[in-house]
Image (cartoon, rainbow, N blue to C red; front, side, top):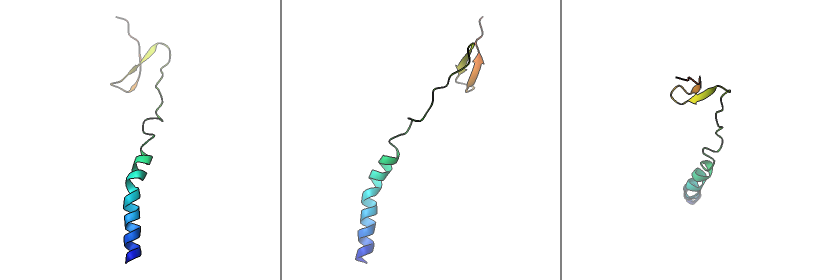
Length: 54
């Protein structure tokens, strides 16, 4: 009974630190989108679109 309480308390005590450690790299692995010459990134369609001169 005491062992179960000790293990549970240890796990609950470490859980917030482990959760923070897992989230510290969020957004660092995203790459910048680049388009071919003559095209530009269109955020609405999430793709490269040709540049149109009016």
